[in-house]
Image (cartoon, rainbow, N blue to C red; front, side, top):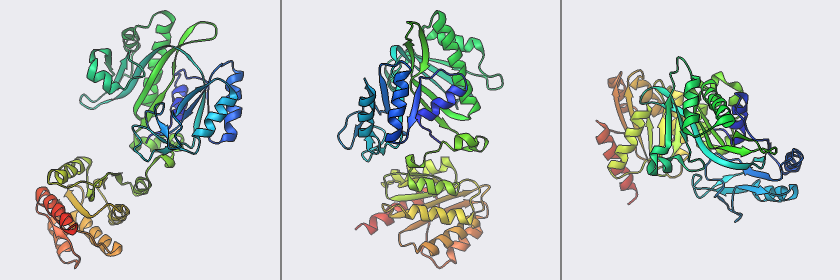
Length: 404
């Protein structure tokens, strides 16, 4: 689950990470009081930031033609005027696609005198099974660009999860970033706080870009998280009721929301051959083999290791809600799952939805003989595949034939 920048900073602040003075505004009526409070705190600038689940906001363009989803304004009136151009309008960035995302929340923030920008993130290194802290002196730049052109500027520190982050590890990163004196101490504290946020919130990733050195009104320098992104492990959300409440359904695709109600992992894609598979790895392989034989997958849909008849029926309904779908490939390997349960669900779903597009089913594994018998005796039009390759070729051919 992804959350907004302002929500990410709330979680970071709980764990001792310094953040700017900021106030979320969900309506135009909220903007002026927020901007006045920022100005009254002594900030000469008021920053207005669009809150959507996508990067590249600052360089984005609203469909109205207004440029930039992040603006630095010089007065309360200018902040209000800017907010009027953002709130309720669709912002298009490099990550949203052409349709953009409607801005329903703004973050009103104090302006900061930035002296230096860094990059800092915590994520899981699956290759070694340990948390990884990544840092770079190249803040404000996509980390992929840094990795591609100046990989020597990325510093890494692996954490033993049984022990947690040790002070010397935070000091190693602060030293690699070139921090000195009071900034060094502030950096160490912040790094430990960011790691604790990742650990305590069961996050998949915590990213600060930029993490900045700013100059305070008294001339002293300190470090704050100017921008923050947190993605959370869905499997652990049951332990965090407060974080669950941060979910913004406006930022999610309607079909993905519907799938989540049935514990289905669904992601819509641009093709016309739908996939219904158990297991993320098998789902990825199924999409690959469809494309290998000239087709285009319409979705990623993982029903999990123990799907029920009701989940399979729900999955079919979700698939068929996509008007681009012209064929369906069901690819099931029964380990824990009973192939006959899947077969029964497929037959029920076909009858209930009055399916009229090609359906290819490949079953293998636990109770497969009974599953194939159920399909064969169902009386519905189902094409069977003997292998992944056979099934993929059949569905691609069937969809192509209907298009002629």
